[in-house]
Figure 1: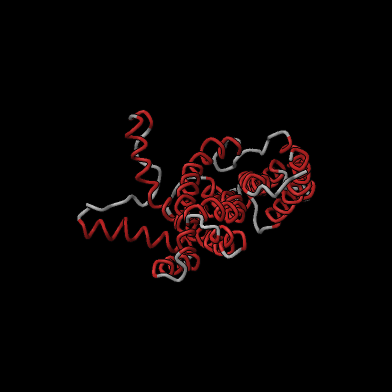
Figure 2 (figure 1 turned 90 degrees about the horizontal axis):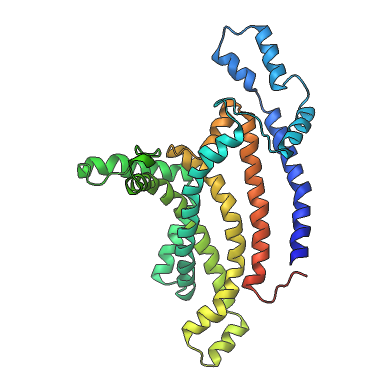
Length: 330
């Protein structure tokens, strides 16, 4: 397995280089640049100032040459400064924004998995029952409804309508991080933070539960129809033993892939969720940086998403050997 993992890691290098080239090229070729943003914000700027700023930002040279310069700095861990915040992009993302995104996405992934897997198993065992039809309907709703629409509807229901109807007895904050700081005490601070997490966390979990439970249902239905499950039932084994000892482990193989891609997918889905709920995470920073042409932050965010995707795909492949003893990497 170590040889296989090393080979896959080496294969990631040219892949990530190609991804970085495509991202940098698309970012550089989009209309406008950071200097154009400064011109719009300051109509008194002179042509000499514009020329000096373009030279300072390196915008006076072709973008392939700028890409090589960026790549050499990136290998040294230097992703430049955030133009909007005046601090290194790595400091802005890793110390100010990424912790908030992790606070949102990790609980969403863990809780949704713990809920979705049993729901998928139940739907498969009780196929075409009333509860299975209800779960299928809710899953289709979650798939078809855009995340931002669900977020806006949740904001209106829990932050506007219910507080008016109940006189404030049922009220959730529309967004943000909260008003308390760690200096106000550990439990008051985290309880206040949790209150602001409920809505965005629920929206992320809603879609993730729908996806994982549907995959789990389909995988489990396929497994319980195979010969080894019928043989286990023919031997007179208890139904619980057949489900959890024989069928479940084989049914989890496709779910490993889904979970491996869910983590970077949650970061991508958090862009809309964080924007709707004003949650200051990495997704919100990516969207704001795209609008303001803060290219250094954009490149860091997109490359971090690309690295997460390839790394967790590798971890999912390696996890196959733990789930299915028939799989060996040698």
